[in-house]
Image (cartoon, rainbow, N blue to C red; front, side):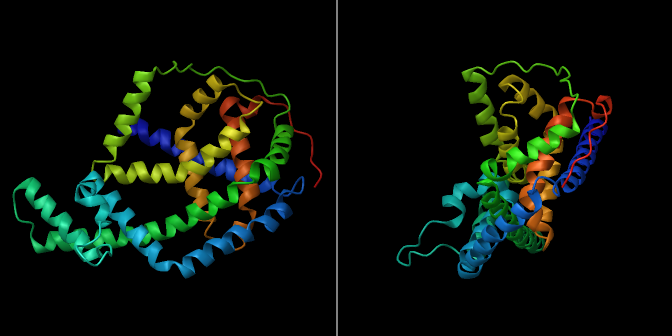
Length: 293
């Protein structure tokens, strides 16, 4: 089981790296690079301005996200991550109060007194997680803002460039996923909600949602006119690890100065390549004609 999961995720990482490389190659065609460079600074400067003027809010949001990711739904039993107001102050609880409430809750649940060393380990882990989420929220907010107009600004151009790379592509059959009934959808949503209640596992669920959000959004837009809904569902299911890894690489590149100027073109081109490569074997296609810049 673990070996199979390792092979699946390592293959997804290799596929994501390959699509990033081809996205960088194609960014110089059809005016993608200069359109991306003109658009990307606007949302980046907006996010920097928001982080500068509302740094206290983002610090608090990152801290609560980190606590929730570590302890899962246990934090919801305490009034929503300490967001309730006090008797007369009306201000949210501080980090020390949040960690103290979590320690008391865990003590009541497991019926033993937590020693000081373990508490300090939890505290340091929560602080480290808060710093991680502070950076991740910036990358996520920036990438999401960049993505908003790309359907009209760059996606169609990126699709045309990618299409020339797969001129003789033929779809290969994938296992058809059965339609989900209303009860199955309800079970799926309940399972997702319950998974958020499990400490540490909630970190995996939250991270995967954040990393996949923009890639899946662009994936759905790129599939219009190429794949029908059933094919799209089957392909997205088969490429799940590659989608997650692609989102991880894009979030990291979003934090690299100058490289992030190409992020709009890179997102569109890499998603188009990921979709085509998942549906066909590129080695079976005839050589692509050369492109002019």
